[in-house]
Image (cartoon, rainbow, N blue to C red; front, side, top):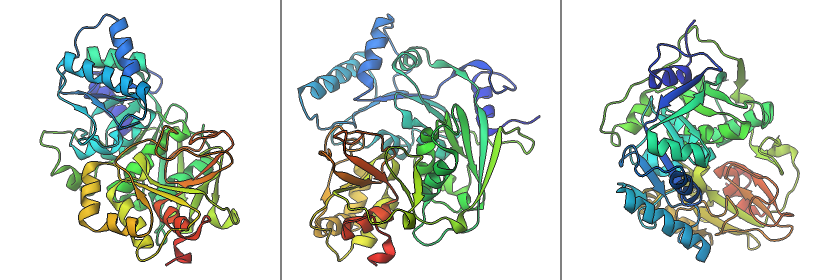
Length: 420
């Protein structure tokens, strides 16, 4: 019996010829990272365990992205403690203001993610890196501390669910619509502790930016990881970024899958996740007129250059609705600069939108876009739980950048066709 891509990667990192779902293994890790929000907790566990050095000063990375620049004294202290730890350990990478991006956008951009890698991060959306054919999964603070010190970690080998997407999507339908549709079909527990393997002709047609979005939201179905096979598009993304060798791993034709789901994307329309769950998904045409108070375009799910281009194309020459706060968040400094050079930032500002430095702030309800009592937001982020973005009576709706841009213009959840 063959193995899936996830099983192969874990087997090779455990020094085994094969592994089986449910098997407990110790596997070496290629990259370990945390942010300013989780890093402080991991550092505390690292010290409590009595560790005094990291396994590799170049492969333990901290990214300050959740509340930067620090919004208050407490946040400043968290960042300071992490910064001090990085200096004490002699780490090569503590990335903060001016050099920062949202970790799940920045690390692939910097060439720190490679196919065939095992990557752990102290953030649930670490699974984003699976877009490059890596096994990537979020871990808690104690596991993070152990991985930082030892360069290896225990895993239970997950079963794999294969998702096959066929057909050709309509104009403006993106990877965000495909993953929201999938969440609507299987629910937020539909892939609990399983690998979500994305394949099919429609997936092959997706850009890398769209694949990152889909891999990012595997955790919203409970997935252990989300993963794509490496193709020519992947290789072209990696060429200018990754300067070291890497191994391309693919699933065997006779690999065993726990489940196989097939979807025809030709029939998928704009998808919207309604409160209070990313799995509460409906077609936009079925939700009626929902007035919005705030639109957020960006964050680790849809803060990449293609997302900026889509939003700008829809907003160009128009103004956002007077009653809406529209916040645009490029995912990294490099994306911000490219968007500036392409005139996208000017488009947003002329449309009366606010453009932020890279941050997770509003998505996690930390700063830069907190909702008040009863307010509604349409966001390209990945979660919409009760109180996620502010007041417990506020509501968050999730959709693609195209829908978000149209909504910013109209004032209610809208399609691009309504404003183009």
